[in-house]
Length: 76
Image (cartoon, rainbow, N blue to C red; front, top):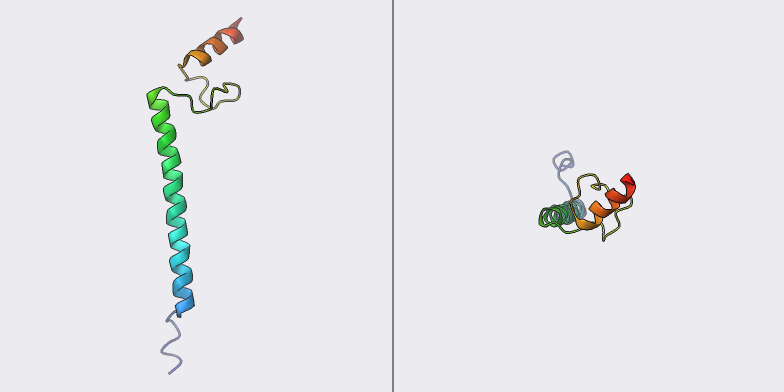
């Protein structure tokens, strides 16, 4: 009789699995929303780094006025 139920999970394992995958789904949704917001801000021409050009990861490609003036200052 016990051999029959060896592969069956109990209620606690079921709830742990549900919580694990639900939290994984929420974390994935949050990461996707942050990524989508960043892409939207870049497409709209808004600064994604709160105006701090120093150390920005897209400084070389940025076409915002503050970045342009900072690039010109670096050239001089």
